[in-house]
Image 1 (spheres, rainbow, N blue to C red):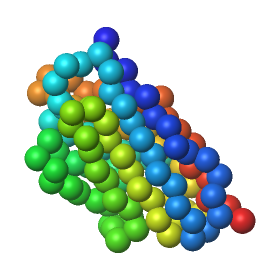
Image 2: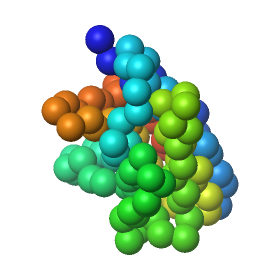
Image 3: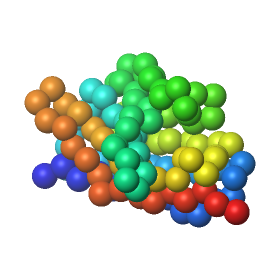
Length: 115
């Protein structure tokens, strides 16, 4: 049974930084694509960033230049470094991991950007 365990969320002031981590367990080989999505209250879940097993990255326009996604294939772990955070980044952040046949989601970690 694959499980994704997220950590690193919290409350931060505008302009601050946070680093999210997502560790996948229950699988002995790497996922093809891992990523982060977020959902703010009353809004649909949206893509934040993805990274392939070959380290090719993709970002939402709203986070380009501020967020950096990375992964450790040996550990089946994906990270999201978030800098210059804005109040509009406030949301529940969800980790996603994909194989050829399946897609998995974490339970989410809350990020709140407020003074």
